Length: 295
Ligand code: GLU
Image (cartoon, rainbow, N blue to C red; front, side, top):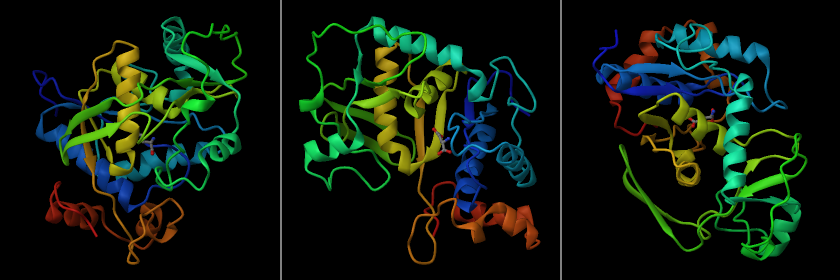
């Protein structure tokens, strides 16, 4: 039970785009353990903005799998709470309000360049970005800083990017990995806040929600460290206080490959079907500790 005096608010933010695997389970378990140790509240947010990959049956499956694992959240789409709705698909007005503030502040600009234009401008293949990361958007493709901004329109039909402060070194103190640094414009470039199919980007939605839901510590996989830098710029542009961050080491398979939703053999579903017990799984996590790298 959370201690009402504890200020800690943590969250689980799964995307219903596939079945959860052991890597997710471990990250979510660490998040739940940290909230529990702090006597805090754990929020579950369903990150269902990706209409192409989203499936309703995955929403039910992820909640069921996490409950099976023994995780307990005090706020979420299935249990309600004071900061709802907890499905991102129901939170559009929050994202739109944030987009309008970014627009009014001149922090964003419309971008009509395709991914191909970007890769060509930087001479792809580009080495700066990791395999899962977007290429660093070249400053040469940006409009001048003083170019007048067109209105957003009721229905957004063009990509909007946040202009990053080129050359500025950003830092944050990660609860697991210590000080993290990245240089804007070098390690990552202007990034999408809203897509031309009128859908907010992960970076915008995530930062807006973590702030609106009063999250004090974000626990997530280390693959999102670069996204954390982007989100720090979203917080700054919206004048919102950023939470603390704790990134978990990623789990790899026997061949050293990072686990992905395609690793069906290691999905919680499959493990359940093979009669694995939740205590065996969390017991293994516990034995390795919330701090240890898991192989
Ligand atoms: N929904 C994201 C994912 O499943 C995680 C977002 C986050 O924890 O910030 O990859």
